[in-house]
Image (cartoon, rainbow, N blue to C red; front, top):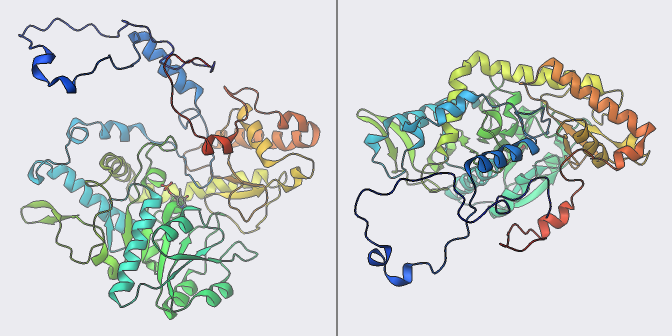
Amino acid sequence: MAGPEPLIFEISGRGKSGVKLPEPDVPCQPLEELLPPDALRDELPLLPEVTEPEAVRHFVRLSALNYHVDKGLYPLGSCTMKYNPKVNEALARLPGFESLHPFQPERTVQGALQLMAELGAYLCEIAGLAGVSLQPAAGAHGELTGLMMIRAYHEHRGRPRKYVLVPDSAHGTNPASVTISGYEAVQVRSNEHGRVDLDDLRRKANEETAALMLTNPNTLGIFEVEVEEIRRILDSVGALFYMDGANLNALLGVVRPGDFGVDVLHFNLHKTFSTPHGGGGPGAGPVGVSERLVPFLPKPIVRKAEDGYHFDWHRPQSVGRVLAFWGHFLVMVRAYTYIRMLGPEGLRQIAETAVLNANYLLSRLRGAFDVPYSERPMHEFVLSGDRQKQKGVKTLDMAKRLLDLGFHAPTIYFPLIVHEALMVEPTETESKRTLDEFAEAMLQVAREAEEDPDRLRSAPQSTPVGRLDEARASRELNVRYEWGRAG
Ligand SMILES: *Cc1c(COP(=O)(O)O)cnc(C)c1O
């Protein structure tokens, strides 16, 4: 495919090299004498061969073609695409962290264990919970781990139960985790204010209910103010309270979910605590629990003893291990750095600014788009493109046009309960100037929907590729490059 940048294989040429190694000055035994014949290759591996400037320019050009948070605002709702301070990267690259081996004896990694123990304690304090496991690899994995603990808790009391309640505004990972954990998801309706419908919750909660999974603020960006009544309803049937903590950016230093009765909460370190994400790199989804679930946490847990830090494996009721080794350690280093740099006041400021930014942006866009729920949102808000749809312009067209105007698009068609949804999360790291530029772009798109709809329907024009067949790309995924086969 002739793209805007060839594959590195296509600029490769036999014998090109970026380094010139000196001749060895020690005697070398031929490979044939070192290895048995069946372990030797017949042909050289097909690796790209390029000069150093070719390699550097190739990757710099790729990074410039891509859109990323170092390039501009990334208002992708539900994803908290905040700017990630570079100091996190500097600390994660310290050789003492970066070069650790997971099999090193405990006494040689005391600093790393201390960091894990302290990060766990900070997360407990931030969420108002009693214990935490840093193992899960991402948010959805934290959800699964939480549900495994919920199952273990109910089993310990006699019966695992059957159902987990999930509001219709939930992130798709919630019902998916419920199914994978062996429970059956039961949907709870939202009311006209965009909150959980308590009557529907009362109808559906019973002695077979293992838990409710609530996102708060929910995916409409609206805070579920009736959490105490929700807690009472769950208590009345002996069900546990899971909170999806992916939206913790709105609550830091202001609200502690443990204080309103949450039993399990997963954190998305890569969202709230600033690890770059979105490109498929590692994240982390630590999961925190209330006192009654502490015995079921995955093992091992890092503990401090008289003689230093240790992995505590003696946890007979633990659900076991949920990831190889100890979790994504360098993501923990970034989160730890971030929390230590900000301190309690700084964390609170994140939440306050994230909420202020979202509300400011909404106030600028309110007149140009339909706003399906009138409640004041927290850190993100959802618009509807219904008005523009009537003019023949879909939300997808508007999102594509925003790319031409130099912005990443908001999340679209989610949450599912809003027609033609546009979900905007500006985050706290954006200045008023950037927010205004984005508002102007959104207002321009709304104007063009009226005056020049074809322009939107044919967008994007300025990106390396136009509209892709996303459905086909995921159903017939083909990422294999066949050497020498052009086209
Ligand atoms: C991002 C997100 C998740 C899933 O987290 P991953 O780290 O992507 O697995 C779950 N719930 C909500 C509300 C989210 O925004």
